[in-house]
Image (cartoon, rainbow, N blue to C red; front, side, top):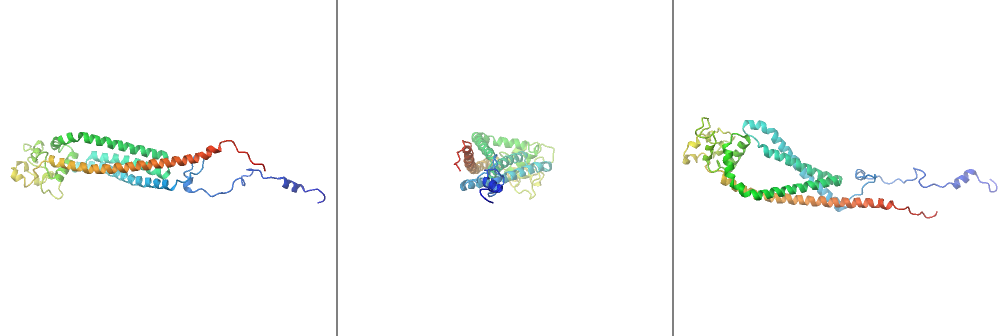
Length: 325
């Protein structure tokens, strides 16, 4: 080409400039793909959440571990309670019943513990503040309930001990009316090696065992009163208790226990309350530790959320001037 003439293609090529953001293929540079754990924790804006610091991650997995263990224990208690409620009917008709109310309480307690622990477990694993708040509220409700029960036990401990023998006499009188009561009395008498409330003569209050009764069990005692019950032992018609109420005290003491269950049961309750108090203190300490862990984890999540929102807030201000090309 001669002179100052230039090719139209060259002139167009020299005059072309790449506009910023003009091509979707060149506007963004390919970067590293976000990790899988950042993708499922992405916020509403689609930006992946930054990982927690090392200390907060330790809190997260420690909270998860504690609540995972308590979730398993709660589900196990729920399963045992439901099993007890399911088998109570058939066993109760045969005379060896499982107590219904303790099994129902065990099932409800297991359900509550399992639900609260599962909320804490998933809240820690998924870093979900809502679930962690539910978990903390459930723990506070448990602590409040334990405090109320403890206060009631302290307030009613004296009347409970004073009315113990009266309650036992009423239970002896209705021994065969309720299979749950039947099971409970047998367990108490067999475990504490006692008979009746204050003495074995309390069984005369039961219309089936009274000597004036026309039945086959007249002047007899339950097998759980015997000194040496049978190995398979739970039948009321066990021959070791037949006619024991009609014997004099010297002959009866060779066959059955003469002492009532009131004093040994009172001593057993005192020992059990001390042991239960130690367990309750340990449980409350564990619950307090879990509550502190959840609070620290919630604080770490709130700090991370604030750090993620601060660049967005800064980006909404006035646009900065570009330097001249």
